[in-house]
Length: 271
Image 1 (cartoon, one colour):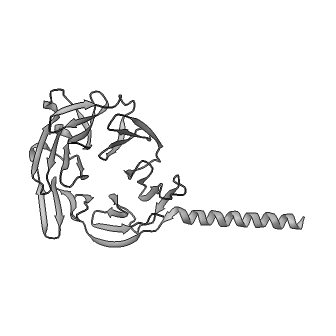
Image 2 (cartoon, one colour):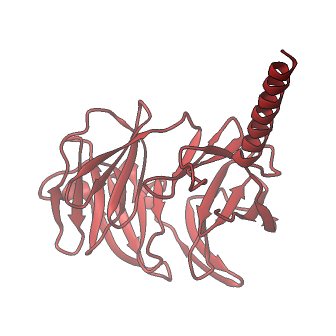
């Protein structure tokens, strides 16, 4: 009887220890590497050349040290979304006017497209840079994802109609990612192949890093799903010093936290 109790207590001890270690493994403790004042209305992130991008009073700007480039287009209203994937060809989306502007690396206008004037009218609610002089398009008229060639001014549909409204979307050159209103996560490639990537956790804000990983915030706490390579389903809390924040940005293991007054940059090392 005594040995049985001993064995039970020992197993309980091991279980509690394992649970404690597991709980420790769930958290990420990034290293603060820099912090400075934020004077913009919306900070957008950085490029590989060290330039930062922001919007202030609906003016889009690019800054590095004393170098400042700006672009504004009063006639198109509010900037809805900015795509910084290619810093030599930046995409500004003006949803209210169903238009997009492409800028060069000094923020000079290269192309302006009004999709309402296209041969086949398109109503755009999502857009991003793709490959071979093309833009990703989500056309609300047919609820389909397509590609628009901005040099040839040609549009083609690539996906079947989506059955649920898009809650969040993000693109890279080869993939259109979206999360629908039921938190289902999908991807579509340039050939129109749609892949279900599972269901995401409830979030306030989210950023997809690849088809297996994403960061999200909920109730002013920040989390990373898929950080642990040995168990990609683990959701880890990122321990930052900010109690509240407006947004975040993650690229190349650097996590940037934006508040109304400051920008903090943390280093995250993936195990």
